[in-house]
Image (tube, rainbow, N blue to C red; front, side):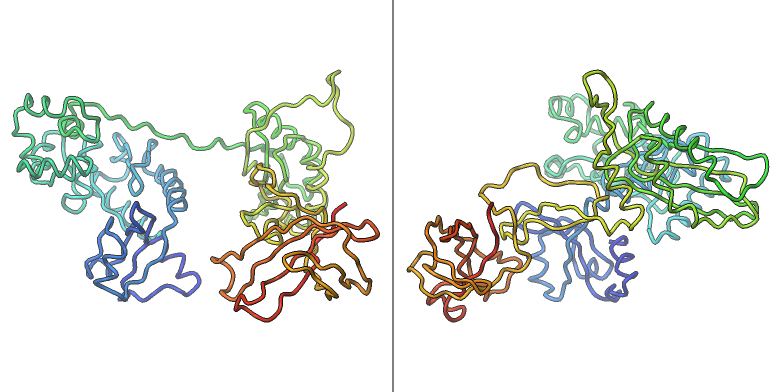
Length: 495
């Protein structure tokens, strides 16, 4: 919710604080609440509740859909950012982080000072946090969500501090929590007092999220739960330190590209975007970038992408450090162009696209991209050629003309057959007589995009007296209540 509010604040569209606001996701029986603001919580909205139920109580509730994928990506970045306090961090579900601060807290003035600094720095990012320190993952998770503010638990205090917490703090499934409540076990202390043999018999075959005994052992430290820290993406960078300041990096760019491509080849990667940075003697840093349409580790090709960009660098009084960093990398497979192992001397299409984009700008070179739409003019769109292709590989289900008009051209029908194409029509000042036809193929409007008055189309493939094959359609039907007589348009040409 705080991430959504921050995004809306950038465009001055954030709702006032007193407006009840929730973010929703799709559930089994309709949208459910994913996150709430303070006004919505005071109004009774809770996470997991159905939106339709809350709207019945509070009709003024504002509902927006949550960006779950964006939240996950932001949490991954935050996990790496949190390594300023300790070397091992890991994501904990969709809204938590676990930090292994053993041996690092004394560098920050102790555990109390460390928690205060964490909370302060997170507040600078616009994020509120519930923090706790404990010897185990399970105890820290429980105290952060259900314990006192900035709780600190020593090794011999785990049982004492967890005892009054509700059983929700054991990270169990909903059906297991419901069963424990029916048995009268509402706190972690109550579960700890139950004989282990009784719990073992009842939950021996249950998995971890449904086994209160295993979760209790994890929280108490009797069952290990190590922090498997995720490694940061490898930083691939080439550097050249100069004995004295210079004004032009051109002479060193080839060596930088060769070094960078050698690092990429060692890891089996290719570069999609790279940055050339020069560090001036006055402390300023100038940076220029280049991008590729396909992953590449060709040193000569990457070098040529900077031909028309080096003049943008402001050297000032000179610079003594030059770096070339691969910012976006992808896996790349080795290919053999010829049977004798030699390279193909022709210019590959991706290289041509990269050079044209580098010279004329990334938005000047475009390529077609498929879209999920059955409307012909919407099934394809032009996108910058440097954008990573994510088109579906499935072929078109029906035959389409090799040339599609950007704007369908209306024709004047002289005579039409009911439920068939026109016998004669005038298009571009010429009279065309239909000799053969196939169809119709009916295409209905997209009700989620089009207006209610949009009429359906019946497409025909026709051949005229000169052998020209056209793709034309009739817009609307007689008596459909969405306009007058049907209109005819030419939308494309076949070979």
